[in-house]
Image (tube, rainbow, N blue to C red):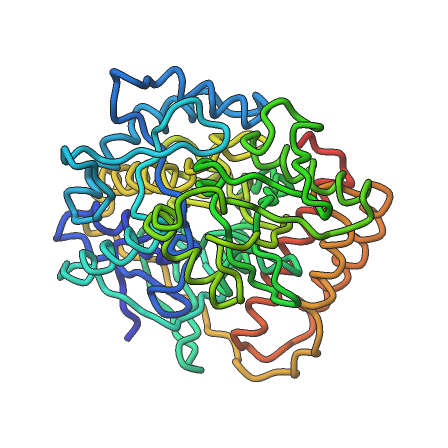
Length: 489
């Protein structure tokens, strides 16, 4: 017999885990993670969480202004106000749950500066804040008797029925399904749509593709942030991030000649918002005919560097770079998504009962460009709001049966052709990376649209590879369709 839950959460990063903890203990919750719980984009977040926690030195108006400036004033103001005003209490909840944020000798939380911020307001755990938060939330979730967890489980479809949904699962080669009143999609970003990304292997846009297939509105998916300082490792698809905080602590950006160049393109230099710095790097690359660029923080005390950035220091050493003595080779790559599944202030999508939170969503908070360290804050605020809204609505289902489960698809089918994902990544990298190529939008859309149609109609074997390839293709198709239609970025 099929199992039923009150809420199914797809994704186990900060948004999914934090949402799960908001429900009363008489609410049954299933958290689905397509890989192990510890593997998520959230775990890779280095810098920290931006929040106004010291009103003597900072205030909401300043944080709102910084967010609007970074977002080129294309933000949804009410969404930004919600983020900034409600966020501090969620950060303090993390502290109560047990997240070990760095502290001053007085016991006050340490706050650092990052590009685009006018005040020191980023609380952090060294340079691995995301991991500290995720690990703490995992422990808290596992301690809750009402929360079940499925790891290494892929969602291949969501079916809307009367009074809820049926969610199709691929679990260790078995095709099953679970029923639920509500679904919360918290599947993170789309980094694997590109050849090079700071995102983890799970970032294939599955939740966005599932929502799209269900008819939910997807908005501004072409608002993609390219981070200016990813470690320039040879031929590595997943490039580890050199945090914004390294520049915040005084690192300078150098071109192939060892010259600082960022001030030629913007008066804020290295501390301009990410899109501005990335654009400067590409233009400088064209001007110099070189992709050799470096971050240099060797002028700072070596012990300070090791204490402040232990994870980045260790990762650089693995690549043969001692950041206390050597310049760090860096170059822009895909990092974050500002668009996604359209949601309102309570996390509700345009499909009744379907919610979303985190990087897979479009709240309007980020506008055209995300301000550093607002992402974890957004995940916290909007996942909590979604959970609270679901809690309110659960009462109306008392005694009402869930609609009949659909027939499960045949898992067997044709073998998936090799190279689909590689081809999509090539197209996206060539067409839409930092400085776009509008002349290629139409041709690239036609190529990707053909791949999408083939995947949907090709009767392919239902595997993890197929699910991710389909997600990547659908996401790339939506991005290119927005671009060719001239939707305002």
